[in-house]
Length: 172
Image (cartoon, rainbow, N blue to C red; front, top):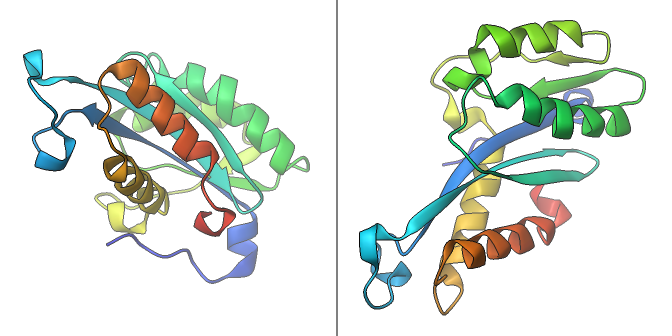
């Protein structure tokens, strides 16, 4: 069950949350299969962010999320979003403890930007506290409800992005 945001209003107003999810084409669930899928279909990985003020960008991650490519995503996507939502530098960024998030190169990047926003300390093994998990769950339900199932990776990517950019503000 997805966690709930801290009811402290000042906390909610100063936070941006990000995360990533993997969506598959024609997974093993009967509701997602259609005909014969050679080699098990495929999948995409999305990285996204949101704040109290706005839904941020969703990025299709073309390769496995690793410490070497994560700084590019936070520099190209997160940094501009934080600057826009929190121009005075009072934002707090929340991410989980995925290995790529805790890598030295990533933590050094955040250290270099502490005057622009802070990185929230996060307890290990706490996916139930990550409000992004709720958004991924809603997206997955909407994706699975669509018919016909996604026939290919391109269709899956397009559908995921349409769902993301049409999420109700109530979600974030």
